[in-house]
Image (cartoon, rainbow over all chains, first blue to last red; front, top):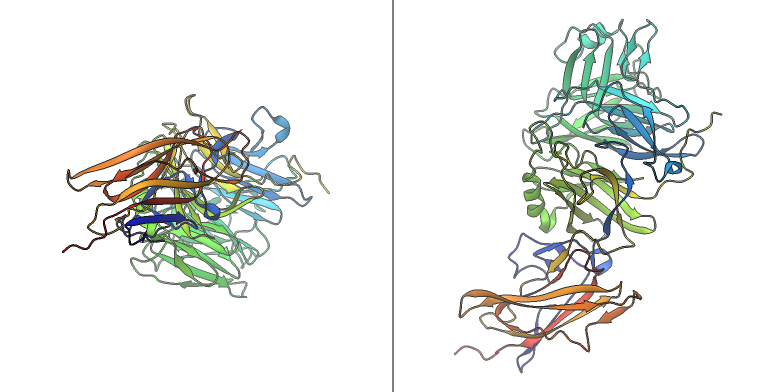
Length: 435
Length: 157
């Protein structure tokens, strides 16, 4: 409430929630009573100013630089919490405590280094993919950045002791990726890719992003290894989908419902993918392309560039896209947006400038290792404590700042976390997740 | 049907943050959590600045006390600060008071700083109230803040 001044000159002010969060976009004198010009490590949940939950480290990572964390349920109803590092997929095994509680399985054709893994549960198995990431800002996406790794798609069903990341075809050739093209078909399929490269094959295909729509797995921002010549091909604005209901069939000459589409008519790169309801959204640095099942097996998707302008609202950071049910969120050049089935809405609010300033001040830890922000929508921090938030985790030198947006109360809070930057390793190499 | 390899009967129900994290003991990688049963982070402090108030434009008000309503989550040490601008000396001014709130029992009930009203007092323009909690300073949950004072209300001639 504004100051209450009585005729005798006494005055009083009361401040109470619900809180509007940080407001750096008006002079401190002109902000709302329930806003703050500057605060840190206070949580605004349920109209209280509460010191944020303590950061604890209950589970040691299986190895340096975890590249992703997720869980899935297998056909027996058993839950598997998995992470990745180096050449392995690791499964959480509480029976190993107090030792590091991870069972290791060889899960990749080569060391994944510090390239984040993208994953998608499909048919009670976890499919995951990894390619080389580009380095250097503005994190526009794309593959073939050093160090090079074999691009691949793999699957683990929770029933076998080894994830599958290779595929042997009818002609006897073997691809180093579950998404592969046989030696026989590679010249034909490769020749129809942008630039019509001469490919010997077999081909190993991986994507920076993975999703699912219409019972088809979809890889986006593609990196291809021609195993015959050990040549990498980078297709940063191409998506490639599996055959309908056949997540191990990616060859359009074998099954016409598999295929690919290169967005040659847009000026930028694919920087993310999410599916929502009956449609999917492919994010580019300067735009969003909506796609939906067409009902045709030969051309299974229709694509609509919601805008293909040279500059526009898109996702500018590789790993800012997050989704929880019907709500997505991403960071564009001009604001932070939430995306629902019906609309996109700017949510940066009065904290936008402060967040954008933090994002602009990220520095690489080395010339080759890029510090990058990672984002997630988390429904809760722990069971029984609901707090639906979009979390932007930004690494700095020896600390990280977690920007927390409450979808319910529509406010932003900044939380600083003590995170030493393990030079030459980056402090953060994948997004948080609720598992 | 093949048996599952490992796994658990239920999800972990935890938000895991993959971070390099081990203050003071070298760098290791952990899956960290934000623990909503513990609001006393041992390694990071907290602060909150409220809106700047001019009370009555062109006048220099005096704040005579501050009253905090808080939830008792345990014993915490809190530094309360009033800051402002001394128009005559043309310098920023501030005054601080450190208080202890809460009980060992951590009752969870609402309490106020009364009857020990914070006798924090400052005469200055553009008054601003703020609180600071040091790292490992205890769990803090503020529900309401009330500032009281006096100001000259006679109009300028």
